[in-house]
Length: 185
Image 1 (cartoon, helix red, strand yellow):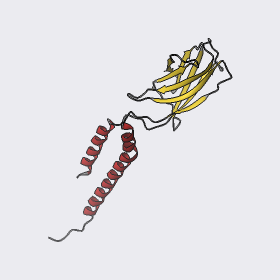
Image 2: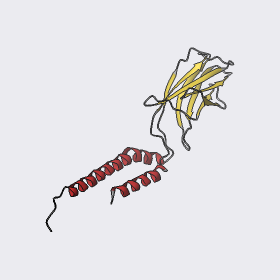
Image 3: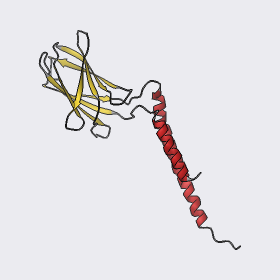
Image 4: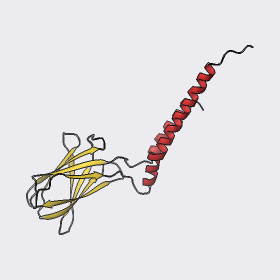
C-alpha cells in the first residue's frame, strides 16, 4: 500500500472513530471565589470561577452551573455562571436566604451528553470561605467511557506508531532502489 493511501485511510479512520469519542480526556482545574467573603444570608454575593487546563491555559466558552443545596433540604438553587471578558473566568450573582452549610455542586456541561461534577461546601453566614479549589475530572458518557479511554490511550499511539513505521520503511525502500548500481543488460 502506498504511503499516501495509508495516510488517507488513517485520516478517515480517525474522523470516523472520533464520532465515538464523546468525553474530553483532560483535567480542568477550578478555583471558586465568593465576594463578599464571607457571604451572608439575605445579602447578594458573587461567585467567580477561574477555569484552566492542566497546562494552565484558561478554559474558554464553557457551560458551567452552580447547584446549591440548602442545609434544610428542599429544591436546589441552580445558577448559570456567565463568562466574563477575562478568558477562563465565569461569574454569577445570587442571594441565599438561609444561613448554614450549603452543598455546592459545580457542573461543567460544555460537551454534549456529558457532565463533569465537583462537590464543594459553601458556608453562608460563617467564617471567610477563601478560594475553593477543585478539579473537573475527564468525562465520558455511559458505556462509552472504557471505549473512549482505550481509543485515546492505546489506539491513537498504536496508530501513530504504525504510521511512522510504514513511512520510514517506505522511504527506506525508495532510497535503496535509487542507490542500486546499474546492471549490464
